[in-house]
Length: 80
Image (cartoon, rainbow, N blue to C red; front, side, top):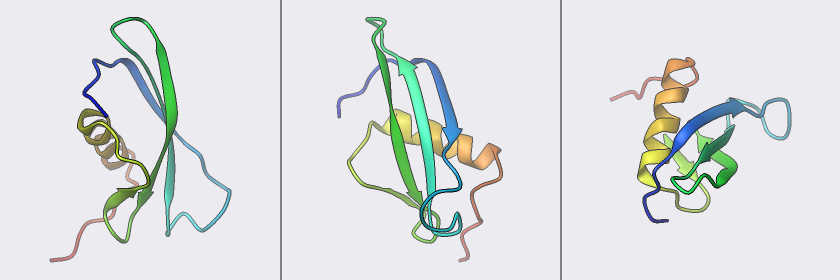
């Protein structure tokens, strides 16, 4: 996915469905492009693997999603 200029980027959790929250985190996202087109979707984060699974997404979106997960307390520390 090519890099998109994102404005009004928001995230939200999709909880209480499917496997346990310990095994996955589903995250809604929405934003507007430079052309004022609305974009939205769902990101699937696998906490045990410390990565998003599924289709590739823009690095800027992934970095923002990781920052949101960290600020919400949903990311566990990696053990070294």
